Every structure is written in C-alpha cells, then in structure tokens.
Length: 256
Image (cartoon, rainbow, N blue to C red; front, side, top):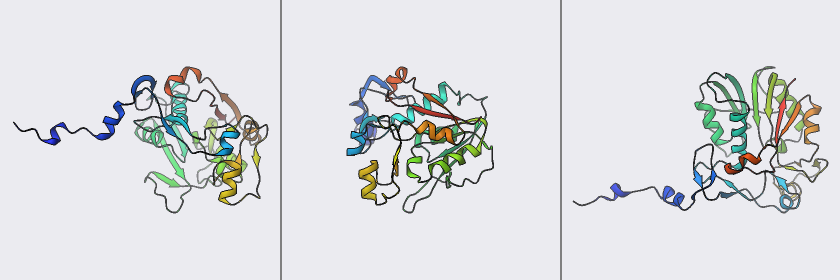
C-alpha cells in the first residue's frame, strides 16, 4: 500500500521543539518541559550598563507558548498566592496592555469578569476583546475592580503619577494591582528628563525609543505617594525551574 505524505506529516514547529525538550525548565502556562529557553528582548547599551531588570536580551521565552519570564512569574503569583483560578474565587479584573497568554487564560476563566484595554496605536491591530483605553482617564467608576494588571506600561507615560492614581481609583478597597516596570536597582532615584523627546535620544538615555524614564529603587515610594500600600514579592528562588529571573521583584500594590 502506498503511503500518502499527509499520513506522516508532522508540523515543522513540533519537530524543532524536539531539539529543546528536556527537564531543566517547565513552563507553568503550557506545561512544556525544556532543556533551555528561547532568547527574547532587545539589546541596548544602557540596559546592560544599568542592569535593568525586565529588559534586554535574555534567555527567558518558552519555546512552545512563547510566554516570557515576567509573564510566568505573574501567572504563578496569581495562582499560588491569590488563588485566582479557583472556581469559587469570583473577581473582576482590569488588564492593561494584556500579555497574550494571560489574556487567553483570563478569557477562559469562568470565575473572572475580565476587562482588558490598551491605548490604540495606528498601524497595530488588537483582539476584539481589547478596548481602547487611556490610563490617564479610565472610563470605569471608582472602586470597580478587585485586581488590576498593568505591566511595562508606566515607563511609557510622562505623567506616571496620574496613571498610578487612576489605577488606585478604579480599585476596590482591599483590591490590588501588579505594576511591573523595567527597573534598575543600581539607581537610588528614578532617572527621567522631559527635555529628551526624540526616539533616538530616548533609546540612548532610557533603553527604548518610547520610554521616558528608568525606574530606580524609589519606585515603591512613587507608588506609595498616591496611596498604595506596596509589598515586594521576591520569593522567586523556588520558581527557578519555571525559567523565572531570580532577581525579578513583583510590586504588589494594595488599596487600603
């Protein structure tokens, strides 16, 4: 009997995954086991010089689902510390500039009332579930959400204090926000300069052409200045097998 090519066809992507199969890393989002992680991020002299966490080229991406180290850490915190994915745990969430894998998980979670948004930019396309929202003027009423996720957004916004205040406003009392940013723990004070406006100058000064600052160790104080109670989650050593950067700190911000 003659065998047809379709009978033995295997997608090329999955053949390539065989080369990275192993037991050093385990992706908690898709379950893939790998011997290494895929390179991600962009190169920048200032990112390297200032040792900016959450930025730069690094081995941090899952070969299968393409989740990055930061996304996996947030997922693990939500699952293990907030018990967010338990069916009885009803929550209303605002997710700004949603990470793709978390976006898909939230959409499928029946216990979660999910709202996601982004400031639409010409030339980009967005899933139909994503609403056009400006973080400086959110459309929701005070005290709407139990949880807000807004990661690697504030470094793009000149008036980040106003954005922080808006996030605090739409949170319920006792609700929390996870607000990750690229941060250099070598800087005592956040570096920003409003006179730096061109993409080329911003890339040189801040590490990316659309960034307006490099956050320093005073980031917690900036968050607290608008009324947040800030907890630093740094218990990441036990998550090393999930390909988490052990230096990454989660900024968990609670509304009193």
